[in-house]
Length: 120
Image (cartoon, rainbow, N blue to C red):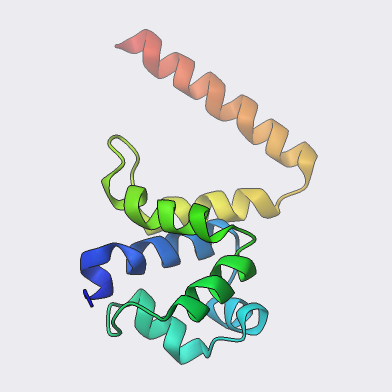
């Protein structure tokens, strides 16, 4: 089996977990997979997990196995889409804010992007 860093599983698992706003511990509780195993997967210290673990992680992330596997294949190679942990953490924090605050943030960002486009 390939190492997770080669297959993209490490990056995808961490990215999806962060985007969903879950800690490794929360994912472990939801999936029944040991937190240290999740950490090892995310850090490329474990080879690709068994099918049962992939199914458990997918369900815990509220995704179908197909969606999760598609993310593992596409996420690291999607052109123009940064896979930056800081950006994912920012989006996670935004998702936690009340709807009213998210709407204000969206207006602010949209305005800022319009200004940047005008300046180009």
